[in-house]
Figure 1: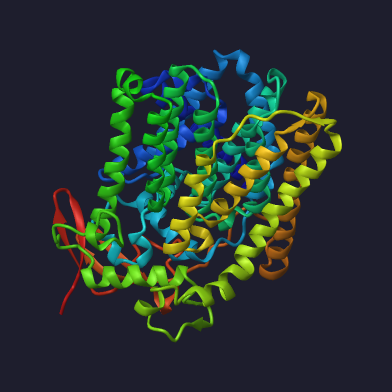
Figure 2: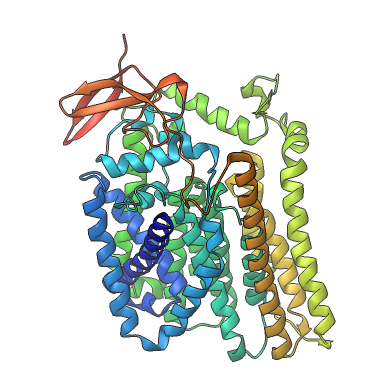
Length: 565
């Protein structure tokens, strides 16, 4: 029972602290954001804490004392803000209800395979040590930076330790639900349902049903949830008739979300192409310059600078494994030939060149060229990963269409959706397919978005009484919650049968007890490696899979190098 109370206590502390830091960020950099939904404040807080964590990691470890202070600040700002904003108590009620209704998703026993290999270890290393230059040598995982690891490093606290290092994606899911649910609450003030409302509703259903398994989110699916939100804001900017000031606020929100998604997965920097399009299309260029938020822009540039700097100090490349970004030839740089080899390997893997129990006989360099990979990709990846996702997407859309047609009495004239709005999702889907066609690299939402767009435009043609629309929307939201919980209860039951998970005994995820040994010791600094070739898990850090190491100094930081003999 004590473990369950600790688990729930810290879950809510971290949840409200993240929202509180969103409030603090808005007060410091852009007060206009304070009027946004509590879900947006949570995502802004997530962004704020991630940037703070990356910056401070260069100087201090995120230990229990440091993290306690950080969350005290967040909780205080949360309480002060909402106690002075009694009109927003309704949002707090919705937050509490959603966090209870979806709470089963936070209980995990088995995490994904990469969790034991480097996700947990990376975050734990930041909690126990300040930044170490050259950690890309420890393992391939340490070369792929994600702000999620830095956010989780701030969650190391007394008693709970690292047992909530999976909760970030759960919070992203909660915040997304809160943002979309607000659109449901606003329905009564709308004269007609619109394209954006239906797109948002379909996105909420999709996220809750398809992304129900938090343990499988890794660094990928949370970024894809943010992509859905990015497109919702993009559509609002293009289609809705907001004032210039509100449009500028939404542009800044769009930029922040793209920065956050990109900090989780670097491939999403491509989505910055949407920003200049919006500015020119809505004729906001000069207004945006006149209303320039200097401090906010400074934080945006600081964010991308810290992301690139972290990549560089880990690998010697600004965007690993892009060989062109490997500049300066620092002592800790991953050898260029190895960078190129890994780039080919990642593309080969994404194009179904290899996996558990199989590998193509075609050399990797040849396999990824000229669609030599297409047959294997169709056989091993399209069936059944892509096809199952498409079936799910189509089922969600058909269910909504059929339901609305039953209740609709007549058609109405829908707002025309410009054809060029399909340009961005289709271009991004094409880029995905040609370069990294694995579902974890954006495929889930890139297939969903154009189909949701077509469906949303189609159903917006039906004239529904507001009472009927409210019932339909509320029913679909409830069904998505029900399916989320059913699928998670089934998952927990399987984990109990296969792995012996006893949720009544403990809410904590499984950690394998690993024995490690020291492979380098110098003064008070030690580097460990797991014995018997096992994963690092939560062993002492820093934990390295590469064993021939030496340590030097770079400025005030330690640098890990390969010991060439």
